[in-house]
Image 1 (cartoon, rainbow, N blue to C red):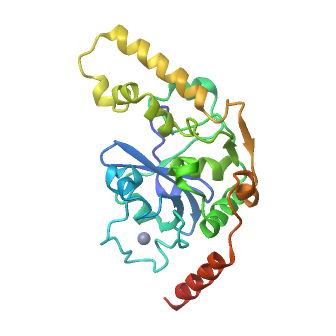
Image 2: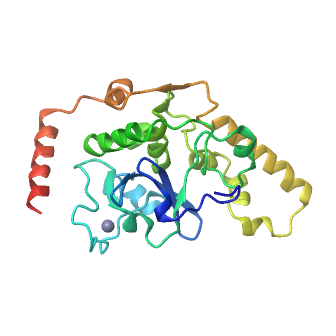
Image 3: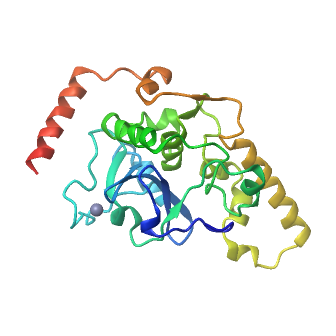
Length: 261
Ligand SMILES: [Zn+2]
């Protein structure tokens, strides 16, 4: 993997890796955890939760109606009311290139990366732990989207590190979320092509430096307000209600449906 790209081949990724791909010609990235067997666990807000979310942008990776998977019958599996989805690698990538998110990079490498959301200074847990978190959340959900401000990158970062930032409506953990805060800067820097556009060189340099420093400050590897949370304790730590009997029955019902497929 080079400094400017984390692009990898399919045979290079291992179970427990945090992978991502770019959608819509590099405008945003979609992240997931490769769990082996050509399967990826990833997070997206459930459909029909909020029609404004669904229609606002492709950022939320809506499921297209005609995307039924021809290869794996369980592709697209998710629990009712959960945004955590199991997909095959092909459906996850949608012909996009495959990239591997880097963990445990040095601060200098982190700052040298042109794009946010491709690496972190935080260290990954062992693959078995990562896969356990991903599969657990597939079965139990990843919480309320509004409260948690989750996105797919937050989900993958949590699965890899177990780290959560304990603030309710803050910046969020991911580079993608912090890019929203610095939208003009992110827009300037989000595309290598745009860097080639004529612009005052001094201004570009200064804003690039500011952007990198703010990105570094929001990296979960260097934040002081992160805590390690076991996946089984997620609900308790975040004040989510315990799953009630009705939900449990729904889950059982969906398990039965799945088995009849
Ligand atoms: Zn598929």
